[in-house]
Image 1 (cartoon, rainbow, N blue to C red):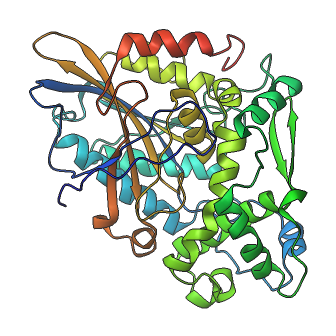
Image 2: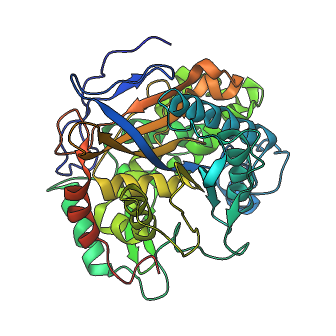
Length: 419
């Protein structure tokens, strides 16, 4: 896969104070580092979203959205499909190839070099974690670990216990992100919403974009109105496409190819930015995961589950799209995925890397996104899996020094969150 040139920077969707990003697709077999630098990759910690699943909405909700008759899924509500497991394996294979080419996994299976911890709450994360363990460490007999099945794991869902949002503060933060006169639906979403609602209910009047609203509750931010419905329906259409439903069954034939489906994901990306990446929420919801990631990068020992020893080289978490969005908000990054309209698509992985300068001993952090193009997910094409280098804010187009990053982020994580 040839090295592709950097994409033009894209504006932050929430008008946050983020530097423009330039993202480059990296080939799996060739390491790229700043000119003149001699750096060694020492550790990686990542969170990978579960693979393709059946819709999580109830049949009553789906029927209220549309009476056209939804496709029948081969698994129960919210469960990972066999195709979804294959998509996780596809991208995990790419992740392993990428880091093996950079010498990270030269020690093989010894000393717990690869560890996988899944969110025990859901079947789809536990099943995805098993695929990650098998494909990130093939031949090692690695088992995925998790907390109690069905229970909240503060590592993946830090709000709870003594950690809650303050509704007034959250509402103020969201309004500030929108800016004066800003609307919940951005331009791309405003264009897609009537298209999606027409697909759902042909011939019905389309609600005005102004009908959107939001509510900040102690446990999270809820977006209401056409934006929310269109965001959820658009994701279902993408899941249908990635699952391999016949073209005539993907959005009832109205989004039967990637070109037609892509623009319909704009409301989903917008809702993710507003309700998951908003820094006020992200530092609370993502506190446990952010602390773990920064601790892994600093080589700190961890006795609590998941226990992480000195021999760990690749620590992988099997989580959700919420976790990817939370980490985007915590670390102040934003991205688009060439060939994939969903910024947190099934099996996408957010990977932080610890690099050491062999001359000075300086430690820096890099960020790489791993994902599959939309058509590549549908066809399970290994050539459609990419590594996307995403510059961290404040560090130009390179990596960030570790300790200043820790000093900036750790104080922002409320002590009560992630416990």
